[in-house]
Image (tube, rainbow, N blue to C red):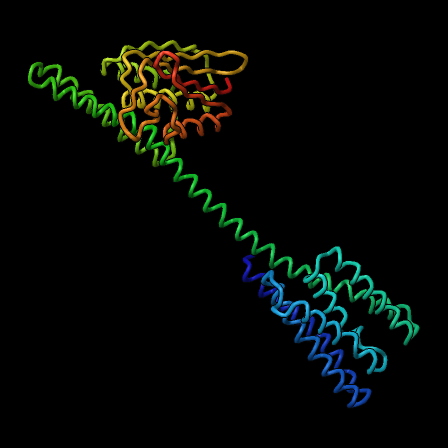
Length: 371
């Protein structure tokens, strides 16, 4: 049920209740025209103020003149008791009970409705001495008031659910955008760096060693094809990586760039989320090394201890080459998009990330995830 349909239902039922009690009030014409006119005036006052209060309640607001509208409805409900024979409040009190429950906090509204119920019951007993009739009129106050309150709450809850649903949809869209942005940054960063590196190497080799230049161009084409596949996987939301495979590619890429690299993997099977987090860390670490450092050596190692898998990537250079670097000019870490994305991936896998310069002028990345 939508909020608009719930509001229409509530308005129809509340209006039906008002009309029903209005017809009961018109029975005073059977006593005398004077009493009928007095009852009609009272009915108009009750229905008008009740309508104002309910319209505001359905919008989860209060009328502009609140609490004056509540006081006027109470006056129109109980003042005619002094003028009409047999009392009048038994007819209008149920609608006032609904207004009280809607407009006031329940800790105040509950006792007020209880007093109204006792007043209606005792008033009917004083006139007719009929216990059954007195109980009937008394119970209509909390029952009708509770029904009105439930209808208004239905409208409010339905509206709140719609807002919550819209908020969840917006959050899901934002989360997907962040995933695509992060995957593109982490996935294409290494590929584009490799393409630029191999293209530059092929350009320098084409004059003196065409065969080696052709081999570099061939590898460049393969990397470009991998980048295309990465984009397609990002679009499909499927990014399952292998730590061993990513490490092998990292070693090959670093060595082709003239960086000596050693890899020592524990070879212990890891949960998928943990392995993917470590694989992304290797990819981002190598990308940052090639982009932002003058490193000549790099070590990639993993170990498992006490149910925790630990990845350690260490290189011997921290020189920043541009404003987009994740390293500051003084060797301090600046959490750019890459490290922030890695920290998020590690947290999603239940782990942690640490990145900091070493004491010997290098840089160290440590990622720990559940094993």
